[in-house]
Length: 189
Ligand code: SF4
Ligand code: SF4
Image 1: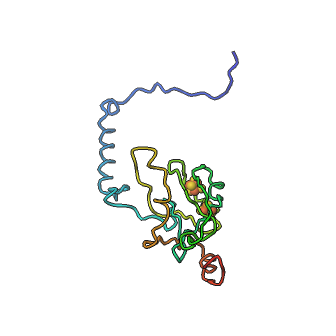
Image 2: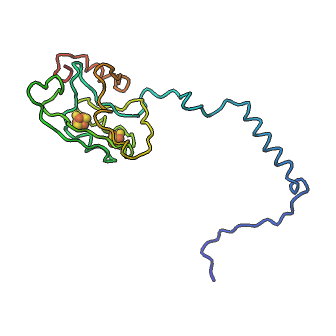
Image 3: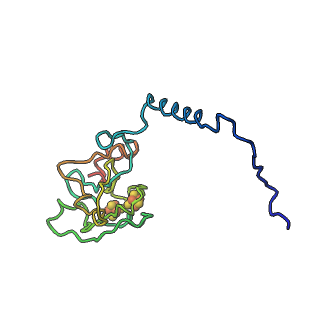
């Protein structure tokens, strides 16, 4: 029968030497490698006592931002959900009522906003799609949990505290930071 390929493997029948048969040199060389690593700088850290330094633009847990007056910036436009490749974002929009101007920046707001952290791949596309600078990824880690339900993050976990703001300026380009200085623009008020 004609072979399908002209590749072939030559199997060696070479007899083992005495030192190969007693395995000692191979064991010693393995031990030497282990000893060498004892004196090298460890590649791992003792987490959680020690943590590594994160990049300034590390993509961790999201934050829903408030504006300078403390009102939620998100207008429930849905662009973040549409751009999300993992379909991790869901929201329910509601219309702002009279007297709620200090709570929500725009006339429409997200009454419910949820991110499924088990689906999220932390790509940052939601951040890029948002026209209201309402959602950003941060250097915070998503906590572990025993059940799947705990990974559905709602507004209680996502909206930043009015008193303890999260600095996201390092995630913005120089151009955006310059643009934001122009306080006469409605976008920046
Ligand atoms: S980071 Fe990516 S995957 Fe996660 S919610 Fe945003 S768009 Fe979706
Ligand atoms: S976070 Fe931004 S993109 Fe997403 S719904 Fe709110 S305003 Fe729209």
